[in-house]
Image 1 (spheres, rainbow, N blue to C red):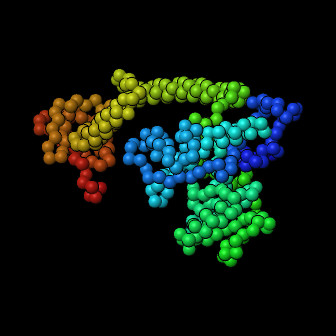
Image 2: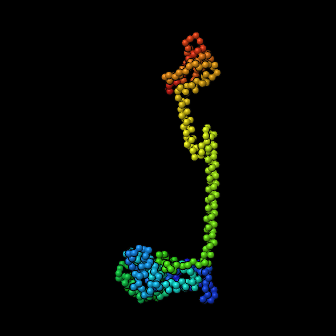
Image 3: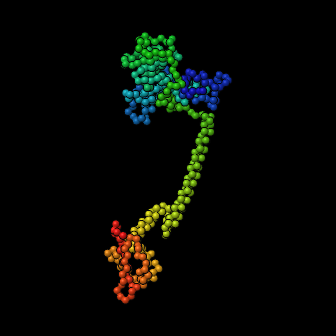
Amino acid sequence: MTLPVDHIHNLDSYITNEGEAFESVADADLISMDLWVPSESVALHLIDPPSAPKRKWAELIPWILEDRLLQPIEDVHFVVCGQNTEGKLQILVVGDSDIQNWQRVARNSGVVPKSMYPDYMALPYEDGRVSIGWRDGFCLVRYGAIDGFAASPDVAWTMIDTLLQQDESIKVSLSVPETVVVPEHLVEFADINNAEVDWQFSQMPSQCNLLSGGHKPEISLNALMAFLPAALLGVIAILLSVIYLQIASANMMEEISQLESRLTQGYSRLFEGRRPVAKDVRIEADKQLSLLFSQRNSLSSEPISGLVAINNLMKGCGCQLTGLSYSKNELEMQIQNGSALKKRKLNISGYRVGITQQAGKDKDAIKLRLTPKKSGANQ
């Protein structure tokens, strides 16, 4: 299994081509990797943020640092890593020739670098602690989230002493081979072990990638061709999703149309009159139900409920209604040919029924009185 991260000095194990030593490696055979590079070729500078707008900082920073550099600014690459707790801008400076050389070494080893970071950043960081590691005769020192350096031991010990003099509370962790001579005053209070730096599993600070600006890695044609099948599959998947959504939408619209048709047909079976559109069915149904409730209330009120109640009593009696009056909750009916009513049982639920003779010689001319019984009265 090939890990995607390693130190550039370990790339010999990643050579994939077979043949002459100077035979070029095909793009299709290249391994894409993130690389740690020697920190002794990278310098960290701290400056006050320029007063100009941020969009102009990239142009101003090289001129601000010009007096601190040993190379012309045209031959140097600058990477802004951010600001420290004191508000200073943290600038990594590396020669263009160094980056180009690392890219060439990587390519000869069958690797195309995606990013490059100073290798002192592979050391663990803890606030208030200086972490010291070892790599091929160089001390790697990290004393901040971005702050650190790499130097030969004689120079590194002196610089570490300077850091300790500035803050006596700083703790020190040393991870160096047993053969490395550590100054006695550091041995007394430092945590010392012989662990090696784990290049593959160290966390990389993405804001400090040296392959930025003009050094961004280019995507080769072969790499694009390798990516093309996946891109085509993605496009096909999107197209199929769109087609599926269109079909599902069409089916849903058809179902909605069928439901609307059933809704309007159901309305027509229940109520007379014009068939409303689907969106108005509820409103029209509410109107019809309100009308029916009003009619029911009217039929249950006097004198209409009394006329409905007496209907069965007067069926087939041969009577003739000659007069009708309603007063004081009493319904009075003047009837000719009412002899048949005299022989019937005058029982109507909820009402009291009385028959009297009309004044005159016609013995079949009667008056029928219908009075509602009061709720709770004796029957």
